[in-house]
Image 1 (spheres, chains in turn orange, purple):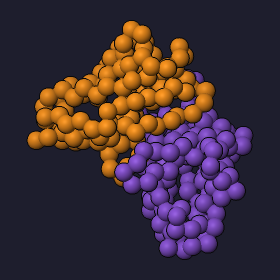
Image 2: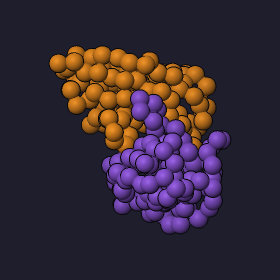
Image 3: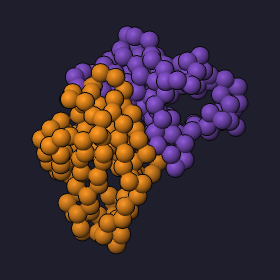
Image 4: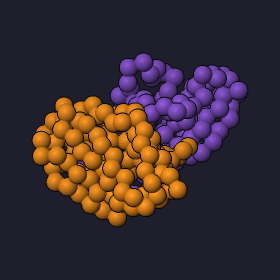
Amino acid sequence: DAKTTQPTSMDCAEGRAANLPCNHSTISGNEYVYWYRQIHSQGPQYIIHGLKNNETNEMASLIITEDRKSSTLILPHATLRDTAVYYCIAFSGTYKYIFGTGTRLKVLA
Amino acid sequence: GAVVSQHPSRVICKSGTSVKIECRSLDFQATTMFWYRQFPKQSLMLMATSNEGSKATYEQGVEKDKFLINHASLTLSTLTVTSAHPEDSSFYICSAKGPGRNTEAFFGQGTRLTVV
């Protein structure tokens, strides 16, 4: 499964959009991009996933570049409860979920 | 989303004893389960992957005789830490996934193991 790289940390003002980038330049054609977040001392929470097309659900939007080498998770109106570590994973469904270092997002009041 | 229940959430055990952690998928059939451990301020480290009815596949450096994984049914996997030592103290997290590559994995709440 492809390795992903993310910035170590980001800050975002409450109420503003939080845009979290992820690089997966070695992703293969059958690998989906999954996003999870982990709030302190809890198990990761699923957010969204996609293959080629942009996706949106009640939590977030996922923008995947046309070449699929990177993606951006967008939290449209960040709240204090969105403070967490966000993980981007490339997964083909046939092997294993590998977590990278993630991005520590801090939403500021 | 689907629910994965992990039990216990916290456990303290004496050095040399064994501890069993259960992971259940409550509303879907988990053909694959993953076990992770996480140290403070670090990412999740994959320990092993198990498919229902098959032996688990362990990551390099993870002792299969120390961390026994059983995935006997489509809704239950267990991790047994045998002869626990203080250095095994960690946060253990399970994850369950249904069939198909377009299905997300759901995670348990985690188990905080402290070996004294």
